[in-house]
Length: 495
Image (cartoon, rainbow, N blue to C red):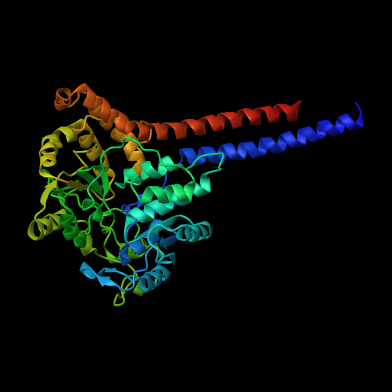
């Protein structure tokens, strides 16, 4: 063999090996991103709106929520609103000014950047460009906030479209994703002037699609809740100071799916944990000497070196031992406190459907609560809550699907968009309950509806399902193609 041929063969082998290594790395990275389940929303930040693994959106944050964001793992906050004065709310919490937010963020160990809207209005390419600079440079995951979560959601999505437009692999965001993800959270981004701003920012037209109706603007003022249908919303643990806003927004009923103080009929104690500042979750209400015992609290601090001022200016310790604002007592979460407060201080109708113990993710639970759920639906908008929105998501998706003649594909896709992942292998009980109810014996009322109406309802949801499937399919095809390229490279190296 000539020296020239040896050189060509050696060069080809080296190039093939390099391509193989790079391709395998891309395959691994793509697979890990495609198969990984994000850690958010967490117990402390259930109110965030998941846009991607690295970006979540929210409305105006209280001091407690800034601290919760830090403890949950967010590294940076971008605020699209400059709040000039702090506003006190109940139980010692505050809606802080931007300056105070910066101070709280510094105490919390999280970066806080203010990027207020320009004087020309809410739709500004210069604001979007500066948002891009911040989002590119700040440590992730990032929480984007505004006085209206409509805009924090919109700007985050537009940023992701611009950043991923020319990306070869997933995840890749398109203008359709802007519309559909916005729609998932109850926002209509196809109306003017939002539509023109999206076209201007992305150079892509917004397609008109048949999407389900969205909630009224008044219900959306309680931005922490997530809509399943225009009248059914889910949430994690509501705050005492939020209930007046929940009622003013137009909600008529609250369904609580957290466990009570005791289990009936045995009388065994069953209080769940209450969320505490600078204390780890999932440490067990009754573990050892009790979760809220001083000795146990000292052992389960998130950061033992936090200053006492992190809790409050008058705190003698650097952790919280009770959370009255989320209906906590000396043991944990106390359902009776929430019940009494709602009944005494609001006109909301309160229902308690505890999930846990006997009533779990099974048909017995659905049948036990079904008739009441159906009756509640006739009285107006309903807020279903638990601690993180997980339990409420399962049962609200089921009852909303049952009422609206939807199947499990709709429910699973809707859950995925909201950041809740139900799979046959990962969450079999939840997955099976959803499929058993929605794909089993249909709601008798559905049979009374015309075929045309039923078909239209299915079509309205097909874009959401199709997008999820197509993304997964594209990712799979990409991995298969790259796998083939890798194999070819190995063959070239060997031979």
